[in-house]
Length: 456
Image (cartoon, rainbow, N blue to C red; front, side, top):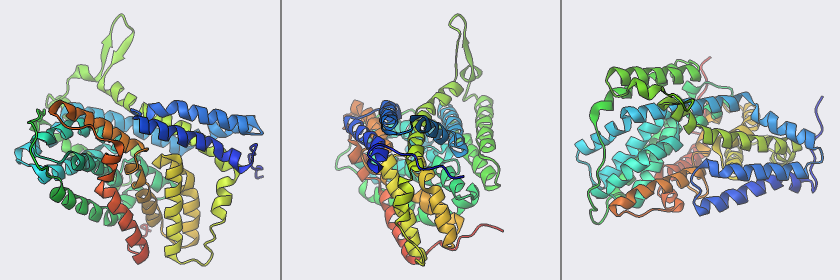
């Protein structure tokens, strides 16, 4: 038996009011330079409170909050974030990023060539770790100040680092958006990533060319000291293992734990990690510290943010407001292109409303699946359109977390006389996300990739 819609005082306006509180708070904090996603926790709790006050049935509203957070795919995302945090922390401590920086220096790259290499380095880290946030936090402070001595333009370099993180997030099989887009369309991760390459590789290549041509500065800055070493190059097999397992359709948890185990084995075997770094007890204080604990803590901020936000979405869904809004979009007898425009439109609308790519995917994923199945659009195509749609605006607009984090990372350049950039300056030079917008339009108009079907 279907439950009646959850009702709010002031009707649809009351149902949407919590999101208005959330958006106003997020934009205000973003413009004020909120440091990370933890700064948005109080805003979300305030939005919860407003929703509870406006709900006519507060008991049911509270149950809807819990129901939204308890979705299996949400829990999978949180476990993935926690394990990806461990993996990225271990790779960073073992010298993987320093190995990339060493390669850049060994090749003598400067100007636009350095900016292009920074894009590739950031993309490799994001692909290996599956996290654009973590990539920005690791690569930004390391590669941004080094650009001063390499004759790079600061704004283009910041954009390249953000673009590389976006590109790697697009193609990584352990990315949160990859997991969510494939999961909501009931298809496998390996095939989704494989068929996505036709869209993301042209955008990545175009970005590389633009950064190489436009990334040079008019004058060379001070030489910036950077810790770089080739010792961490053997760790490059870790992302290969993870990708290989997922392409063989092994479970995501198995792939991540396998990557963590291999990183520890290589790190200890080559002396890149020490046993005490993995677990260190502190007698008398009843505490323990380790890289693994640090990595898990790295995933806490975005996990709590996501839980609070998906909780906020479920009462809105139960109110029927979203169904009514989507129901007005009649696609009966529509062409495949028109249906796909609708898919992309609702995905982009959801991400602009929620400011969170994964939450947006979870919010509209079921609708897109039902719409696509009724219109004969294959699951791989649906998943890729969803994923690419949410890899655009969140990496461009200044009130989303990726540009905010990248702007924060540019403070590392102050020691060498480089400017701290605004989130807008970092986002507007993200050539990759701008390119994706164009490629999405071309793919829908031409139908390129529409026949990518799952193996029988």
